[in-house]
Image (cartoon, rainbow, N blue to C red; front, top):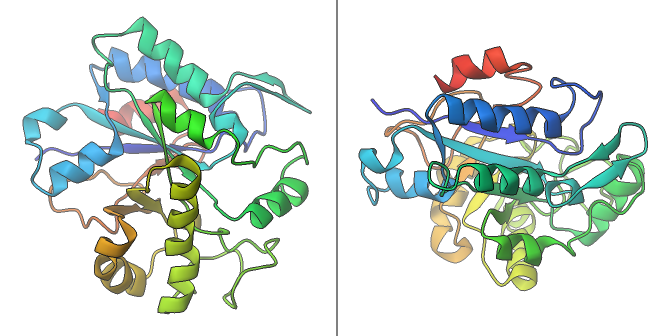
Length: 270
């Protein structure tokens, strides 16, 4: 049975200038590993097409999916980190990779799951990052236009403790989103703002913290598909995706958690 791994990176969580603690270093090495293993990076929405029976197994053979979480400027361009210096940015790394392997990796693409709320992004930038204006939405339209990154839904405010506009649910968890008003606020509102900024309605959702519950996966997301435009949702449970996967509980592997070196990633993708 065909099984597809989807990889997840956090470009802004930097703890070192080595593979394990720096997503930029890891991504550059991982792309070369993927190429050397004869795998191809394909858009996540192709995987959804496949699960819906719109693409054959042969079209997804050797596929690897790629995603970035939280939607910082580091996903789009190079920045100077106050502690770890020059970081190349995730999109430039992908673009260089695509130029090296134009035939083998013609479909290279990453889904970037962004936090929508301007206030929550400003608060996270100030209190959780370095107050360097890394959580703006200024780059979303340009990223979407690049053809190599799509801007997707990671909720309105990630239900972060620093996000003061959040509805009444336990902070730093998404499991407490269990009613239609809460879900509309976090998910539908996010899609609407992303569409307003980029002109494209998101196809995909990624659960903040990887937290999924039965209400969201079994009731709300399937029941609002026509309204929201969402076609699939991703967790971080660390498994491959096969034909029997639930579109609303799709798994991903997270750099720094499920793998911390190339040897571990090779085991995952092979």
